[in-house]
Structures are given as structure tokens and as C-alpha cells.
Image (cartoon, rainbow, N blue to C red; front, side, top):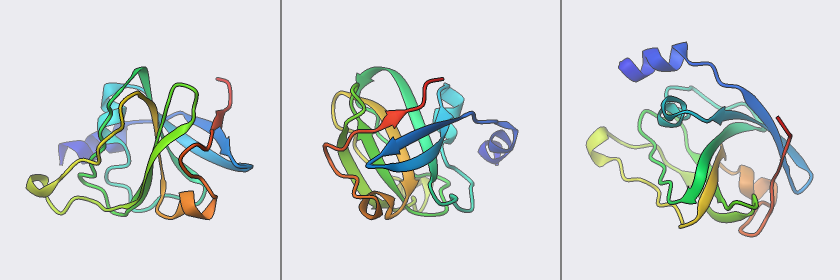
Length: 135
């Protein structure tokens, strides 16, 4: 319940990104609270929208799907914005006690979450590179 209230009170900035000629509008998770909330409690994700998690240094950033209502594609990018791992159709957790994280590769710098199937539909694969609009 607390995370639902926090979600309702939190505003996310957006940032445009593109990969393989396809444009996306990504909500930016750049604070601990926004990273914790992620896409929790949303009913759906509009087409060509997603979430961008920004980290200050490369490392391992596992993702879990607690309080999620739909599957997503999870993309980990390195410091040069190159995709280094993709999990397609990552399923939400069944319960808090059965919530297994999706493991990050080492040296991830960014994480992008898109609708399930978006990476395949847009030919995004390991080695693809994203470009981000300057802020």
C-alpha cells in the first residue's frame, strides 16, 4: 500500500531515446525512490514508452518485478549505451516471497524497460546501441 501511495505522488521526467531508427519516450528513474518504484502499480505501458534507470557508475543492477502488472523486456546497457543483455518477456512476481530478481551483467550503466516484445519487434539485440536526447 505504501508503494502505491508513493507511486501516485512521484513525478518522472522523460527523455527521448532511439535505437535502430525507432524512437522511445522513457521515464527517467534517477533517484533511489524512483528506481525502487520503477514501473510498479501501472496497469500498462503505452506503445513506444518505457523507463530508463540511470546509475552513476557501472556495476550490477538486478531488476525485480514486485507489484508489476504486466511482462516487460529488460535491457542492460554499458557506459557507451550498447545493449549487453536482454531479458524478453520478464514476468511479474507471483508474491513477495517468490520474487526472484533478473540478474544484471557486470558493468551495466543503464537499464531500459520496454513493453514485452518491443526488443524483438524493433530488432534490438545484444550489441545494439541507443542514443539519448541531451538534457
